[in-house]
Amino acid sequence: MNFKELDPVLHSQLRLAIISVLVREQEAEFTFLKEQTNATAGNLSVQINKLKDAGYIDVIKQFRENYPQTICKITREGQKAFENYVKSIQSYLYTGKKK
Image (cartoon, rainbow, N blue to C red; front, top):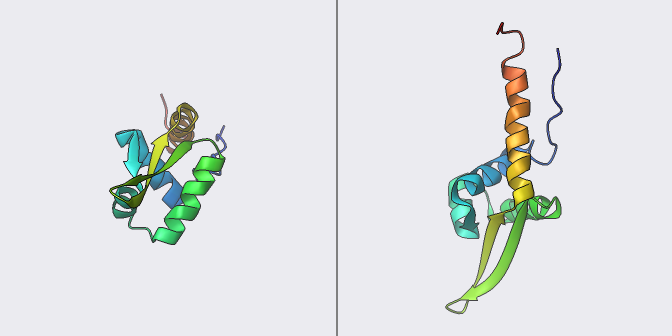
């Protein structure tokens, strides 16, 4: 059996949820991600920074109507990492099944 290694950056429930939303939406505002993931603002912020540090997302901080706004965009590297993660999970799911 050949199990593929799981990406430790994405092998976190909240980081995987964030990246999953961004795969679908391409970009999302912080409050939207907070609503979609049911995360606290503090935890979401920490996990966004980890994804940013890994190069999986870009974070744009700006002002909109005098309020701070944080927008997260998935990078090409993040998209590829998500696809590889899904393939790795599939290697676990289909092990033992005859083709």
